[in-house]
Image 1 (tube, rainbow, N blue to C red):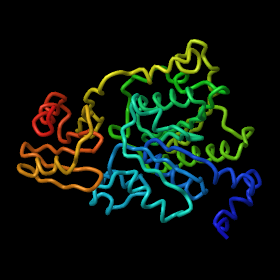
Image 2: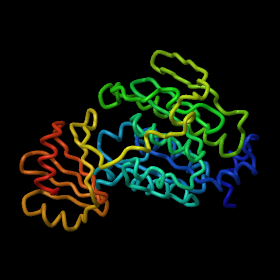
Image 3: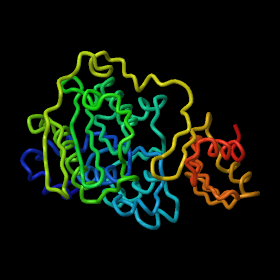
Image 4: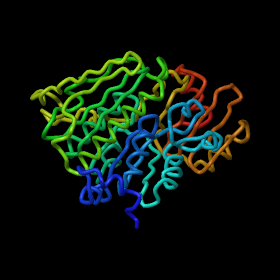
Length: 337
């Protein structure tokens, strides 16, 4: 009876009962639980993937609700981290799936540990720096990686398999251009659903072993202007630092992460040198700030007008400014060096 929920899926000949068993035995990581990640996780949970590791650094905000399908207004009011809100919803959808929520910023120092032991990684991120880092981990450890991106009414997706295809770095180079983001150009929800659904379909092909059906190129589409194009992936480059030279440059970063401005959000992220005890921080900040907290994060309204969002791993979002110097000054004043 447990598999009754998958009966229609098993009637689909390329999956069948044997494919369903493979899906249920799989361990998949979704990196980024924003617009793409929520759709991907929803499809994979409903398909019966045995273990889903959800990785994201952020919490649910009202502007997310237009396109991030697993979240609701209660998640916003409760300041729930995205992976915690997603876990809550996915457990109601399919209690047989083991959900592993990880509230973390993916860095060179932790990326290999975060992705250890998974069979497949699906991209739900919103920046090429993190994508290239995940790409390096996947090619170093032989894990297939399904890339996806969406902005405005445009989307793209490709499948990268170590030892068989080129990698993402072969396609985009260093990926250090600023480019547009959904925070600056906007995005409509349908393109998110389409791209993420295509990613989920490719994930199922890989999990059941139907490699002949796998997408072989980079698909790009614009659903507002009704255009679609598929481009053949380049051959693995002998000089590529990742799949050719096996140097994995994104994993070579050293030292503490520098403060960064989060594009379009009037927010600076500062990664502290150590974890923080939220109870102690709350006690300290409550003397001068309006503080809201839950087990996963703390938000403090500062007398100066900005807000701090503080995570146990030491990350602090300084909201209300894009000035790195001012953000660092507020961090030093209220959190300490």
